[in-house]
Image 1 (tube, rainbow, N blue to C red):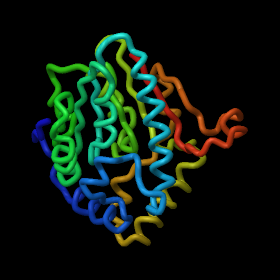
Image 2: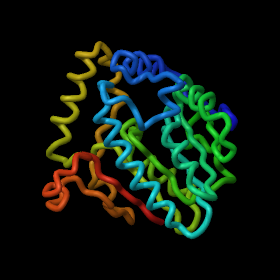
Image 3: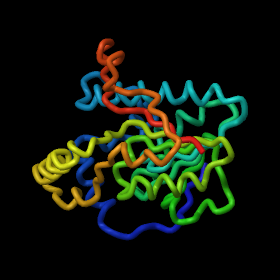
Image 4: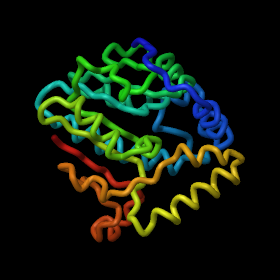
Length: 242
């Protein structure tokens, strides 16, 4: 595993984001990251990790059914736990990217011995993959940090191989009627946490913006079926195909 550096975006986001995550109890030791999504039941974010375990298992089982080795890019990989899990797929080659140096440095350190896993410090939109394409591009709990949903999707589509797919998991989407209230809740949360500036870095996306793409909702938490089963995963799983 190699940690590379490509076209870093300057600014205060990383510093503020890391300080917030420390306050929230979301900075993990190397030993904890190596075990994620498994975490002690007494951890304050235990339920959150059960949700992320559920969505990651569904995604991995889906990708395992592909009939050829899978080149995977995870954008916004953070500490790399999901990229590591994706690397367990037979024949896979996985790259994780992030603009948070602290987290991606930890990812490279913790998972240094996995030969088919590579981490890059930088933004995939910057052109670092001009000569590289992927079978699958994954956004897990990260799409909300990209200001334009259509902008990041268009950039990702250019990196897909024929019949490639984009998968978005672990992120909320809002109807137009919900956007105003959602933005206000986020602002109040960041203000209460002492980081009001971060509200400018968190973006609320509308599913209607995907209407021009070939997309499917593979898991809909609002469906009558999932409500009947009382499934606890609140996030949709969205697949976008070429």
